[in-house]
Amino acid sequence: MNPRGHSPRGIGRRAYARALPVLLLALAVLILAGCASGYVTTSSGAIVPAATVQAQDITGDALSILQDVHNAAVAAHDAKAGAEPADVHAKRRAALLASASGLRAAWDGLSAWKLGSEGAGMAAVVGKVRDALPEMLDAAVALGVVSREYADAIGVFFGTASQGLVPKPLAKEGAPR
Amino acid sequence: MNPQPLVIPQRLDADDLTALKAANPDVFLVVAQGEVPTEPPKANRHTWLTVISVLRGLLAAGKVAGIFTGPLIPIAATALGVGLDHAERAILDAPEVEDWTPERIAAKRAAVADPQT
Image 1 (spheres, rainbow over the protein chains, first blue to last red):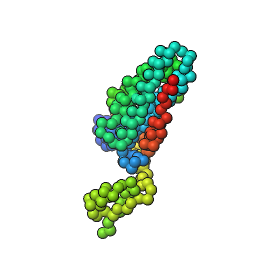
Image 2: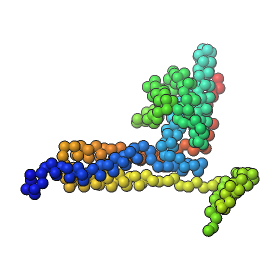
Image 3: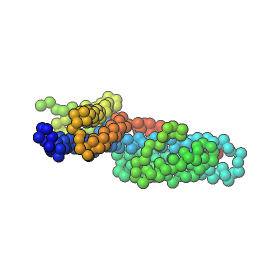
Image 4: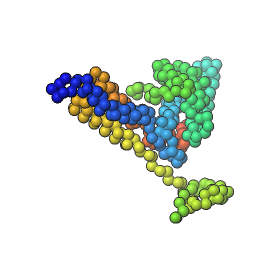
């Protein structure tokens, strides 16, 4: 009992009772706001959940980074024409043609996703380019375009995304991650 | 009551226009000259950020007033503060405009290089 006649247990119970609504309200907010919230009016006029636009942007950014690596590898490859064995050059050319084709298919997939086509999504989009990735990334590392560590980070991103999970956004090489 | 006007894009052909008019007799159709302007992005994140800010204020006031007594409530209040930070970060990271428009995607696709040798 304290001087005002309240037992410590009673005070604690009242504190819980007063704090509980605040906690429950905050919990509700956390559940609602825990992921990308709201809607985005896209350039096509469609109103799309922000989480979907966020996933599309992450995918577009990753494809863009991958394309930069691919294009740099293509430039380095073309510069080596005649300066390396023909079979080595031909093998790399085939890998780069495959990744070019995969990249175009992936961009088409992203367009389809933005247009709301059925079956479109991050996994479907990255799945179009993923098969061509290992050889292209190996070629890019061999040509000195990217480090092995960064090539592995790209591979992990596309591997995770192809399983239907939303990976952490892929940063450009050298950018803080 | 005045009919509700609806701006439709110029690219619709005559058959589609006729079908649209037949399906919407109470709607006044206006064919756009040029592209239909899109609405500005819906910015409801400010509402959530305000709610988070208010909750932070309540938490701070509760701490000052000594509401959070007992063995578990202070821990819960701290965890809630961390959760609010996390929620705020998630909201701020969510886009309000799309980065990858169809035009930008098409331009990037066109820039995919093929080996020449």
